[in-house]
Length: 456
Ligand code: F0G
Image: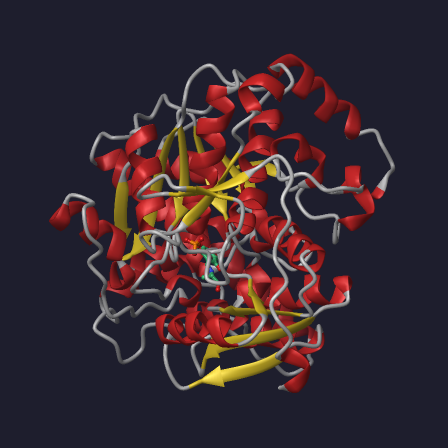
């Protein structure tokens, strides 16, 4: 530990300040745990001089469009391309980038038919370099970690944050420490962290326990925290919304639907929408809705049972392990953006998640289970009349299909709900299953299989 125990370098900032989300106290330094020195609540990044200095909306749109033709490294990043609305760097070369962002916006014709919503699109953040939306935030936060002089970065994770952090640390010449709940993250995500060279600790606790421990660690050792408590992460994740609106030619959709776990991503998208609105990049706000798994529904309960005033934590349990979080750190930020955009918060069951995931897979796109809560949630919001069929809807798919192959294989083999209370309810999903068949290597056997499949 001796090499770690040098005093923690400070973040020197340009053009932005840290603001406490509760008491609005402004500061130039974020402490190691990104909490307000006055009241202990979370910090966010604010740009006090935008009113005087931000370029006009038309100029921003044109600059961002021109950068798409550029071959410079910084412009090839779908995050740094929007750097005018991010914390400033002294030089482009400071950015640690893997060409993140630039993710596709897909039509979903089959899901449109299923839901009866003709204007249904998916912004697929799983098409990022490490396969999840985390890369958009990580490029910014890792860059500022290195710029501040840290040697070590660390995170608690359900898997995707750790994969992303390990990759960006490796690219930036930083060491990384990963804390993950033992047995509760997919092998595919764990394997990424190992391959990218992270020091990986599988702790005998859940995600919330890992995060608690990390909070203590950063006060004792000069490791830079890269969870979404880190406001630089959220600045990077804002660009998802900038890029989405650019892809829609700045015509806001009626609804954006996003999964909710630790609630950093919904907070970041909401911040981006509010900033775009304030800067005149969009003329009206889409409604931003958050969907959680029924077994990890802290925000749903917080809004319903405590009117968003205090967090109701839960003991989280869901097969969508990415969002198996019971004590979400950014709940206040998320509650604020839901209110500001007039969005909804809903929960969906394990069977609904499995069905939606298979339906997104059948589009030839696929996603990980946590991302599929968006489609399952849309069906609920339609039933409630909150979303109307004639409205336009964008689902944010947060992770790649390949992130959790065990879930997909268990589903198609019919093992996902075996021995659970959902076993009989899940039988309704049998028509969506495509189990592999083991055959002798004989032509007749394959032709028979083909003929049987033709009948279905
Ligand atoms: N979808 C995926 C695929 C995720 O990995 C996560 C979070 C979420 C949705 C929820 O996003 O936390 O910003 O509300 N994964 C974290 C991790 C917690 O450690 O990888 P959120």
